Image 1 (cartoon, rainbow, N blue to C red):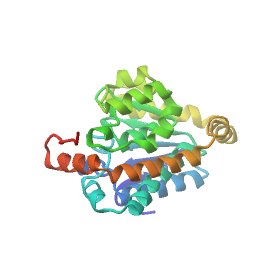
Image 2 (cartoon, rainbow, N blue to C red):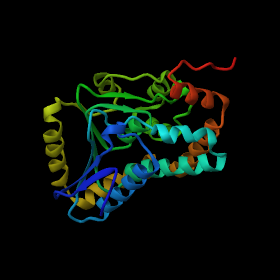
Image 3 (cartoon, rainbow, N blue to C red):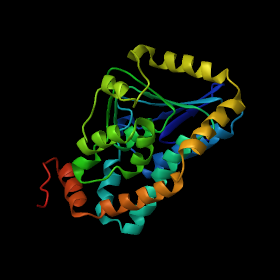
Length: 260
């Protein structure tokens, strides 16, 4: 299987998926989203894979939406924005519901959709240099899709604070609120992830899959309906005057001029 935006390897019992757009700070674009989906599907089908690691090349884990993709928002119709939103939502759900445990390794900024990637994984490890934040509100955008998963992970009160503030937080703060599981020295991040993955891989494969399924059955009521509502809200927000101004200001590197 050949990829252009990610690296994929299966050193059994692991599958390692690596975001590989370091020159773009591993920003999300349609190709990266599609290739991530293909890689996770391959890992789920591979009987030699028991645990999936998600990491990134370069200084950033994922900077959110690619600038080129961001520029297209203003020219896209509601229907096109809805279809685009559904693709990202499908990837988040795929990772969240994967039958095998997924561990994310965050060694740099994880911003907006990039923070969403880390959020939907079962376990998130981070280095002291990592940053986390859902900054969509800063540009008049809406983090509706990740909201569906974030509330399940850390609770509504914390989710409200993060999404309304739109600020980046340090890994120790992310640990305190339950957004991540451990803060690890940079040179020990991959060894710790491998150690943790080996511990998980020693467990029953059926038990791991059943445990993940139990979370979905016990706490995932109306997940599909909520995701679809989030996609609609996302698409509507992209059509708003504030979003258009926020994106334009971001691209022009100036403060946005919000309508009163």
